[in-house]
Length: 294
Image 1 (cartoon, rainbow, N blue to C red):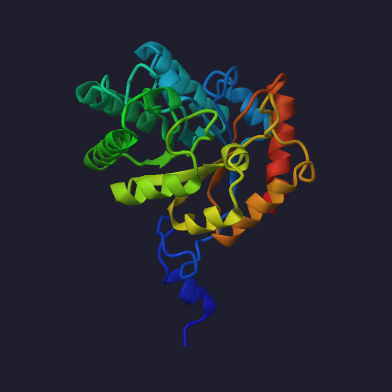
Image 2: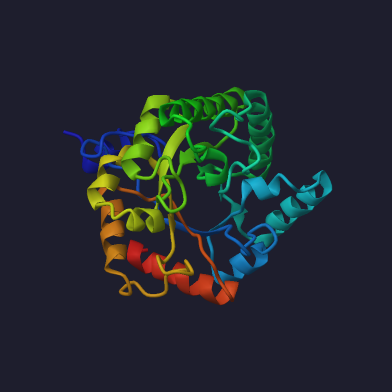
């Protein structure tokens, strides 16, 4: 008879995925970081994120791609001396790299993906968030099914690029609420396209902000549990600010209870607007850690 420890060890390494009911993930404690958003620039402000107590930084990949080689090297040196690391990146694709519609250019997309993922790898990113509404939103009058086929092709390209180059990250599809995007709005829709692409380097993320605005149930998270590799959180107020107190929104508890049900113990990033980054990030991180039981 195996001991419980021997049984859990036999389920596989930290990266293994199983059914929600049939697999228990190894729990190492939820890591809490800060993502790029409007005036929050984690590459430029990484010292402030370390001061606030963040476990990691999540800069914008598309913004990083606008840096010269010299400026990128300087940013990488700042990261190395900061005491924390870039573990994830958001805003993968800029609006000018169209992914859907008649203006989508496969050669331009493939060139951007190769260059962007190489920079993400140089920074050590493990998760690349694919929200990018400007790039993925479907032009008026263009068939949605054709747009979904284009997005599947894009994600397959990303997966192949990561695998072929031996990069250490996965792409995480982000469902966005209907106010921000006209395609892939719910956790179920995100899970569906991930399953259709069927590539080990293409996974799913859930952002509390979008999940809450779409009035999704915790069961949506549980059903997609084996696919979920990243999370974001902010308030759903008009300014989209960082959470401040665990009791200020009852949906926080519902969200984190669902995360516990799937054994989620990876990363969650604050993503929102701030006036005082250090102060507000410190409070937001404390709130998220309290909600996660860390």
